[in-house]
Length: 120
Image (cartoon, rainbow, N blue to C red; front, side):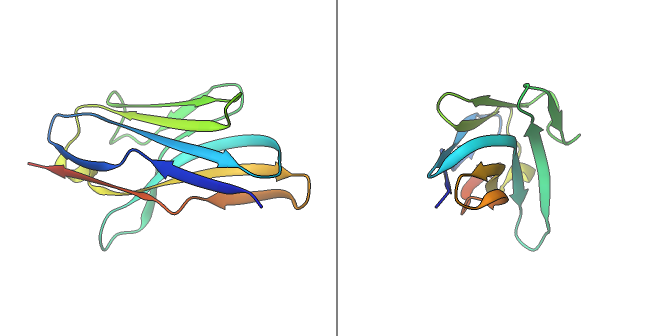
């Protein structure tokens, strides 16, 4: 059973920083593209940033220059460094990964999310 577990969310003042982590565990053969998504209250879940296996990245326009996505393939862990946070960044942040498991093949996995609240 593959699991994604996020950590690092919390309450921060505008202009502050947070670092999110997402650890993948279980019967993993390989991890492909990974990403962070977020969902604000009453809104749809949107892409924040994605990173491929070779380290190439893409960001939502709203976070470019402020957020940095990275991954540690040896630790099966995804990160999101968030700087210059704004109240509009308040949301539940979800980790996503396409993972090949020895038992189930290639599937798309989601974490349960971690809440980021930015106060003004």
